[in-house]
Length: 111
Figure 1: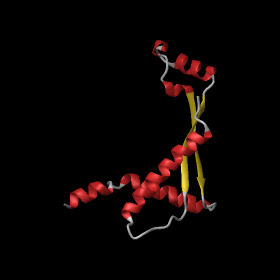
Figure 2: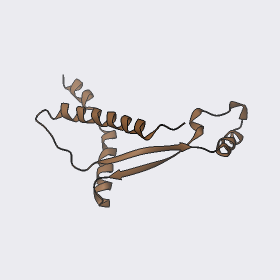
Figure 3: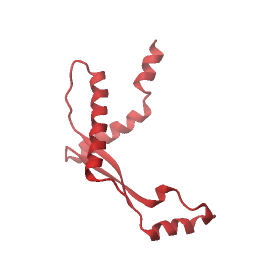
């Protein structure tokens, strides 16, 4: 059963608080937030037919399915700036973060 909107908002508020804590620890003199982009994997219940089709598509249907098979998914994005080039830029910058070593790793190497 999908969570309630209140439960989702509570989870998002906790994630936001963790993010702000991390940013604050890196910027002890203070900071502001510019453009904000929110990217989510949206999960919605699969139909019985979808799950049955997944089971049939397997070479060994007796394996059944994982609980994730009960959900369909898509990616959604919202951004505080409606300009496409800004949205593209912030998402590309986020992808670049995946290629950089973690800050803690870089600090450990410096010691």
